[in-house]
Image (cartoon, rainbow, N blue to C red; front, side, top):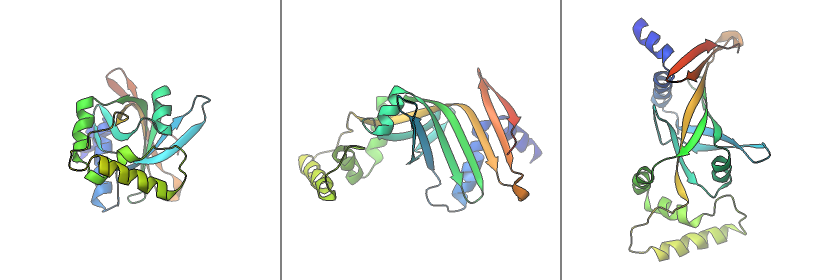
Length: 199
């Protein structure tokens, strides 16, 4: 056990994998939910919850409409932060990094795994744009459904994945008397420098 902890302490990806696995094992609904924060051209921040769909040593992947507010902001200013908070087991991870598009083949492969209605929804929703009424959204969805009736639904050109390549991690673990554990990992070339922070 001591060896495992020592290796994990030096490796932010292994540590994230361990914490994420524990969160999933608690039965937490959508343990893959994370807050993505971006900023507009004036530096004004915005945040929203999205679902992590894949992670490995290359980064953290989620999917979105590039014409949405977050899509437009991230394409213009790709430095973003991710925040995972798991109420049980009272742990939090912040990831700071730079977003880049996944490959077309990766986006196509993931889109093909989505339900047909989710695929149609990606075409129907003009994400973040003003909507006159709920009825209009339903009508748009029904129109798209008719358009693709009897055919496979292709991935919209404006819908793809973004991979956040981390440059810094911060791990927070709740402790008694609010004397929490807070650890950072900063990327230096191919290595990571680890240190502690006051909580």
